[in-house]
Image (cartoon, rainbow, N blue to C red; front, side, top):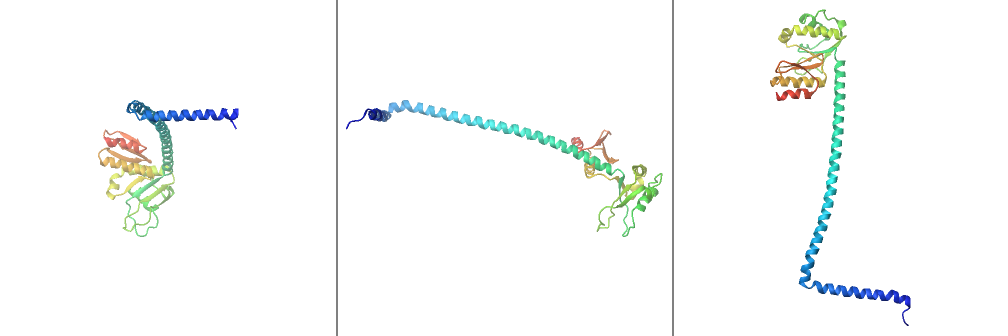
Length: 252
């Protein structure tokens, strides 16, 4: 039985394609066995592969470079945001410190007053200091003192604890501080010190400022009314509100 017309249309082309493919493969194998053909083809193949690899690597490098640039942009944005947040935090911290210091404006710390084993109270001790040694005018009375007490627990070494005094008003505190300025020699002779009740932040500033004085970077450092002041080597007075303002003097 012969092939139908449809089968001839499907089978005969496939047979021809297979014969052509086999003929081409045989010709290529025979050609590749010849050295002059290989010498002509290999450089072309190597060049094509090299160009393909170079293009692929270039594409990957460009993608990687773009990723790095994006990371750098993201980092700059985060750095800028961090700086803004840090500035906001520092601003809030400064305002909080100012508010806390203002709440202490009626208070002083007295150090160096002997502490007996049994002490009935410190109001009388404060009044004796203010009126007999400082010669306060007008004199300080019990009505001027809101409260006073020793700070901390009794020390095992017997050293006297400082006394914190809160006056009823800022006016009474000012009387004591003005009298203190006129009685420095008496206080120094008795090793008694009267200072503002500073916040932790302001106390740290004053401590660092005094270190600069000892290092000969500043002439003087002190607190007044809860604020920190320094006098530079030229004798100029400056209010200090943050550590950065002190750090400037370290290079002097």
